[in-house]
Length: 291
Image (tube, rainbow, N blue to C red):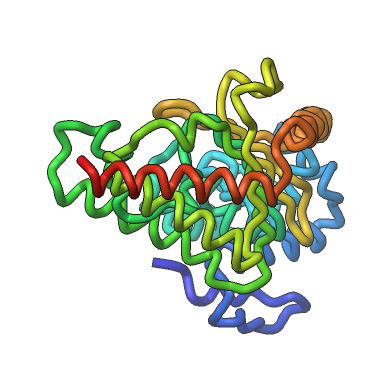
């Protein structure tokens, strides 16, 4: 449970009521900013005491990154907050997502813009239920059906970010293999690609396809996600089977931003990409009907 008294710590000695629509992590981040400023510490200065970067402190304050439990305890010691962060971060850090992806999913939910390169799979934000179920079953062939249901539900909930007509901006580059690999069979693929095409036609997402003929390209080693925020530094996320890394080093993020820009330059235009996606979806539909 969150500590109700400390969750309303005063900005100037009196109680401060958080907006009930604000996430617990954003509330904790606001309290971190207040406690830091009360100690007259800059983000860089606090970061040095915690052995993290100033940008990392800024991301914790903005709620785009969780406060790890070990850092929460250090914050209580450095800022004299009486155990506030240790208590409240333990509850705030609980997630329905796997540990390697939880922090990235939570950052994604508050991002202003997301750029994602997906060489092999339709990105989670754009997956249909049937497609997501096949992916999770492939990764966990012996898992109980209830576990697969939970994973699929969490993934579809992530996709609800796109019900907002404008935010976040989502720009995705799909490797052509995403279109050609039959995940779940022809009917599942036809539905999945039609869904991607519908999002593009609704001008909700920007989609490009990197064709096989493009040859060698940056990020051949795996998927790449870049996230930009209104009031925090950008993040890059790299994911492999059962692993993930969230990176905030400015030089690293700039390098991978260049990689993404070059991927887009090597890809088909959004109009050409949409035509290809719809054509492949139609092929799957025709083949399914004539088996």
